[in-house]
Structures are given as structure tokens and as C-alpha cells.
Length: 154
Image (cartoon, rainbow, N blue to C red; front, side):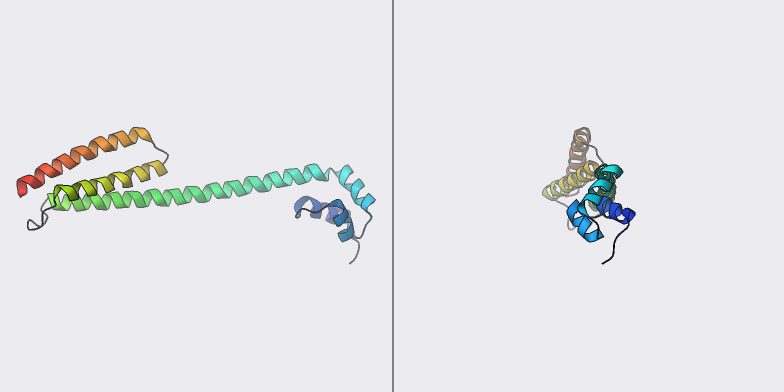
């Protein structure tokens, strides 16, 4: 197997998977006492802790970036859905097929879906309760306007 250098021993201990000093000595072809003394004088335990902290920090950063990307995609999709629902409602109000008017129940369902899509997008963006109240008020107004418009068309 061959004897390993002091640098190889330190690198394996500090950056490698969990390995005991006894296992390291066997792997390196040196005595346990030698590895113990090198470890103590070289502060391998502290170096290992620092290395693990760096690895953990990098992993957390990557996870955070992935979550942020996923949230951005989700938010974009929620707004796309909301825009599609608004277009569908507007098409019926502004000259949709008069033979198949949109009934108030359908309007309520669509505006409910619109509200949920907007809330999901805004929550993904970090917004919370203040926007929900504004959305609720505006959607109620929109629902009333649409209902009034459709009742006049029927």
C-alpha cells in the first residue's frame, strides 16, 4: 500500500469522509502515535470543523438559489394563469358569444381562481396579507361589474 505523506494524511482527515485517527494511521501506513501527534500539532480537528462549515454553507447557498429559481418560475406561472383568466372573463364581457353568456356562477368561479393564482404569485414573491385584502376588494368589484354587464346582456 505504501506510506502516505503528512500532507496526504491531513488532507484525507480534514476533507475526507469521517475517518478515525486509527483508521487514518492504517490507511497511511504509519503509527497511531504519529497520526495523533500530527493531528494535534496541525490542528486537524479545527481544520475539519472549518472545512465542514464551509461545505455546509455552500450547500445551503445552492439550496437557497434553487428554491429562489423555483419560486420565480412558480410566480411567473401564477401570473400567466391569472392573465389568462382575465382574458377569458374580458372576452365574455366585451363581446363574447351572445348565445353562450357567462353566468354569474361561472364568473364567481373564474374570479376565485384568479384570486388564488394572484395570491400564490404574490406569496411566492414574499408578499402577504396586505395584498390579499386589496385583491379581495378588487375582485369583488370586478365580479359585481361582470355580473351587472352579463345581466344586462341577457
